[in-house]
Length: 595
Image (cartoon, rainbow, N blue to C red; front, side, top):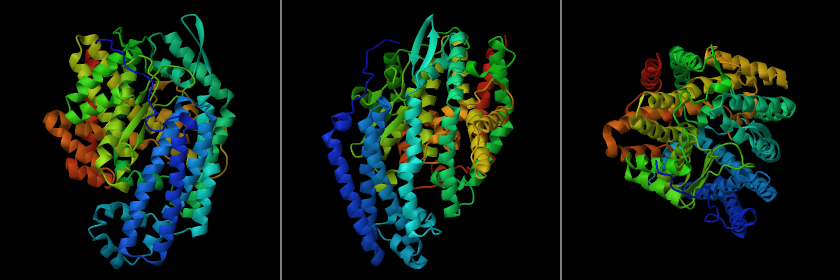
């Protein structure tokens, strides 16, 4: 592939010029505060006059407020990712958090009011033309009202979240972003960020991979008490809120947020457990190829062949642009705009946050993608993954107000879909057996991550919540829970796993939702289903795909899949179709490496 030069540092000034000292941003935040104040007035009026017109006005203002909040919050998130030591941005984060708390108070109040409206009257209101498009989300609000909490209690919880609950999450981000990891590479000791050190897991030299692994483990051990306090306090706060809200278990709220039935989740894990033995065979074979009797965790991401897996950023841009365009003109044009307009921050430099993400800017119809691109094939996959999130945001541009917000479960489907395009195209372009083995290895790593690694996170969180109810959990016990969960999820096929996964896995510290894990596996298997349909239909599929994404903000996952794929996701048959595709990858890998 030709090495073309592309900008690797994003342009945030198009959103708000001036960074954390932006006068435009401050004006936007002032406008947002005015919107919240206006919204609070409308809700008070609606309390006294529960008319359809008042509800229409309320829904419109809530949608507009949330859109403007997302615009500011995403910008501040980007500032802190590119420079975790930006104290002005941290102050702005606190301010935007207070505004979010006020919005959540309004939302809590609205839910409670809606839950008290007579059923017959409620149906009359929803059957009007003005509210027809909001039936799903309004019914969802009504159903999820905090009926067990008084207005004062709900308000107090929102207030405590800002400087308590969410503050712990922000503290974790700052803590891990400021860690320096010293690693010797080619005889030179380098000071790396956590993100850069983690990227070394795919380094061609085993000694470098091993040194990076144990250097990180040493840091986590040194700081385990501090990280354990953060995790205990985040989880402890959630448990207290669950008690107040009389939630039956820790999974209830995440399932509702992801619009998935517990029956669906249990069926998915059941099918995955049935097929796990195949993936253990892959791990055993890969270990054998590397001269080991078992798969060492620090070798999991290692290349299995001598095929050059370096991909220059310019090569990745060209490859992604060419192959995404083959799936539809809108996806192709979106990718070109993202690269040409400076939407992507990919520069490999220290002092950046370690975790890739895609931030949505709905007010201007843009996205921003953040990662550290170090030049590997895996980095190209990560870049494609985050572009998939951006395309989902693009698809929602034509969707009204509150229906723009979609659950994480379907968000991970769009990103996985784009990963599949890259992997499939790479497999078709492979010139020999060695190249095919290398690409299959990358595909299977993703299956392992979703079927085994994500399952270990799910098991750990279940067990941690259960024990945390009785009091604070020590780092030693957290390590034991992590090790037990990894052993069960991997079927004992991973050697020397990181027992400190509970420290460096950021999803445990995300305060927006607990169990920030199972939606990845859901999205992965779901994406396999509609990717197969895309290959069958070719360019004709893009409109169907866009319609599916646009519906993702106002349907349950069960209804969404039934409408667009005609499948019942509470049945084993649906999940088995995706699993069988992944098992075929294992069989092909085993066949190609049989010598």
